[in-house]
Length: 247
View (cartoon, helix red, strand yellow):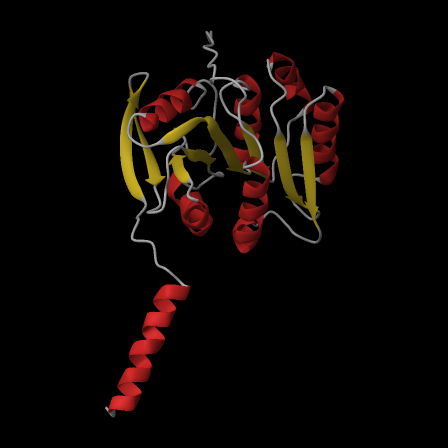
């Protein structure tokens, strides 16, 4: 190979490394014992994380696992210095209370705080589909523990509205949904927004024109919008966890 071409390729490679730094951080599969059960979860801790760092708890959709959302959020987390954790639901078909939270999520977050430089006032929730519904419920149940929630394609059913009154803090919530979502029609999502707004919650709804339920097709856009919302909010006091007794 001529020296001029070799030099060009070397310079081009160096420029690519500078312009597009590659994170050496990997998504890791781990486990934790919570309430007598061994639970699986995935973490992503970017190389550039700085103390104190924000943490986002990722709640996957039906039929998925905790790793998939982390894969979609990895670029945003690397750029912004966000620690990610994606637990598996006890049943991939969906999330249930009390098996999947709030106690399990609390135990998971507290264990991560002991290992990583996490800011306790900037622990957030993100969920899609079934994870979005569960994320809304967890945000309301633990409104003084999580700083804010951002969900994609999710809503509360009318019979779940009573949960709203259990929230001790008006936790900020951001919902994104496609106008052609086949599982969460606009009327249900708008009704969720309206009932939260009526009760004084700082709620934002972004309707994505002509988009359906496929979060994965435009994940980068949804994730960046979610982070732009979440990063503006943090707890004004130390986090307070509410322990519930379930019958």
